[in-house]
Length: 272
Image (cartoon, rainbow, N blue to C red; front, top):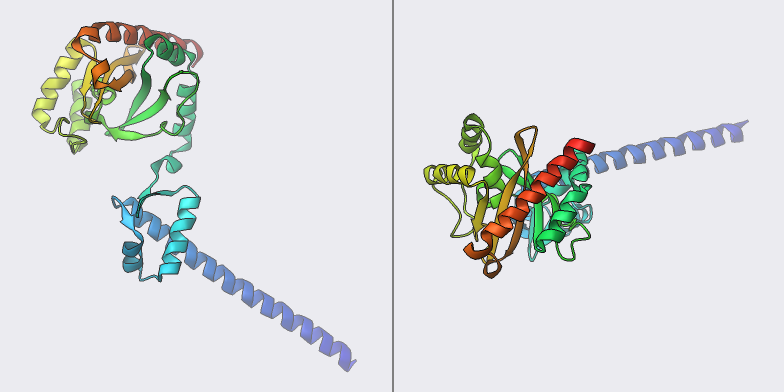
């Protein structure tokens, strides 16, 4: 009988130790998760963070900070360029936006437009003060450049963003511009809001937008709006080295882009 009680006691003791170990492990996991989320938020609010800065901000050892950053990088929440870590917004796109991007990527008329234009072809839409890339095609124009889909730039920095903005009504333009910071991407980017408003009026009159190395030095871009039920919903553009886009071939490029834009509109209205 004494032996039986001893066995029961040992089993109960073992269960208690296991439960306590489990509780301690859970607490450690929650603490690690909380720390990782704080580090992620810190990176999100910054423009490039080093390992040393994370160690200093959270008073972490080098090994702990490195382990947290490596885990976040492995999960694609952040990415690293040289010694700095950056927030990866692509991994946090809302489900509805992911579905929207899939829908844009399924448009066959974009592939046909790219084949006709024979230049890098882009489709983008507005989200707040950003231009979000929904389709990107490079030669031979058969497959989407998935790594570029979802990329964001400021509206005023690209022909795509400018031509969509120019075709909004005045109230919406004013509302968006009130929130825009007008930071430059290159020395050619518009930074003066008043001058930019005149530029938008010219784009509306012309029916297309021209990006003269305003986002990337050496690259020019031409864009036209994409409409649905008379409202602008996106923009179609080509981008190429500056030498390939000139005033001499601008009219031809714009004509082809408008043909592509109308085809996209027809496909959207028919199937979506």
